[in-house]
Length: 296
Ligand code: NDP
Image (tube, rainbow, N blue to C red; front, side, top):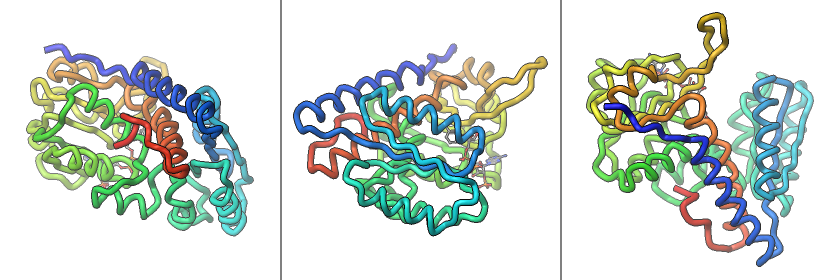
């Protein structure tokens, strides 16, 4: 079997177009422009790239983008004061604090100081609890993007066996919650899991979120399974720097029914879902109906 490629880049463009349509409608019918504030502390090069592309895409879908770049030695009190200001600013519907933060800042404290209704990353403890109890929440962008691709490919996920490899708070755990919410039978695997190959071989859906280049070989994949590769790993091969996922794409594509590539799979969906979450937050805060198909 040669797997169908799930084109995350094309799908993300579709999601962004949907968001842009809804934003235009909001402006025309309600005079509201959704606004996303992104806070970057320090000068981590990867974070700077992410923040720049988030800002660019926010503007492209017609939203307002507010970038706050703070010095690496910004005090916790000053950062919390900025978040408080953004929490109270009616023009700001979404707030994202780019992680990781410099070591002297308490990440949990900072994230939990964001108004949960504006927490478009879905990391606030209230949103984690709401998701875990199957209530309406802000859902972390990467797992939301994975869920959208899976729903688009399969329609219903009900009754499918899903294995999520990785149990981080930002990908693995929320991914598992979302799959459970869609009535999959979910296994969460991690570094202490016994017989990982056997666990993965049972899965109709494999989500790999590990951070180890090409760790999952094709012979772990059940014939016809759907593989969602969240991993982004930079490696040197043939003298060149290359991005690869957590799955060995070439061998997995020979057995899977469908697979996301790296790059061009989950990555582009993450920013598209950030924009979708900002739109959702804006609609909720104004008592307007939520955009269809853009939430969990
Ligand atoms: P973390 O490092 O926080 O978590 C990795 C998880 O993988 C842990 O739960 C760990 O288990 C598990 N793990 C590590 N080694 C093994 C192993 N040998 N066998 C089984 N499980 C193992 O990573 P993240 O969740 O933050 O990210 C995972 C990957 O996804 C990274 O490559 C990251 O770059 C990428 N990513 C991509 C995004 C995108 O937009 N496409 C967004 C976010 C992340 P344990 O808990 O036992 O240590």
